[in-house]
Image (cartoon, rainbow, N blue to C red; front, side, top):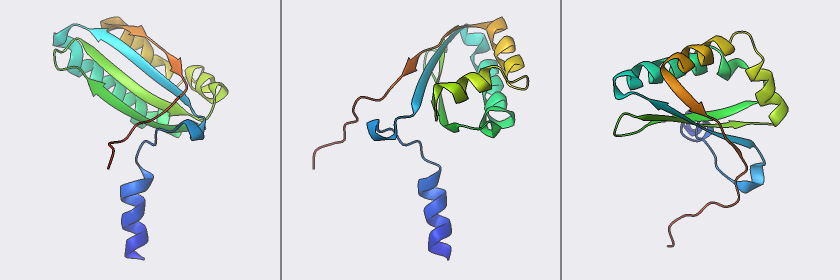
Length: 121
């Protein structure tokens, strides 16, 4: 029983990048003044935890911030384009993007995974 619990914690909450899963991958790049980077990070964390993760079709996301303070990038996976569009039209999710756009510019991108690489043994 404890093994199942540990397995779930370690492996079930990991973003799985694979061409076989056929998820919609979003790589959204925000450009921000370094003084506003942490505010943007906090806003995107709140948006994801309070709204996005509760919407049907959400698979996972990973939030990144640049070392120079000028970029914040969100890597997200959705089951389908329709599920992603549903989130964008959701009244609880959209105010967060509106707030983010007050302090940053936004370059969204939709992708599909072509191939992943691992170190050779």
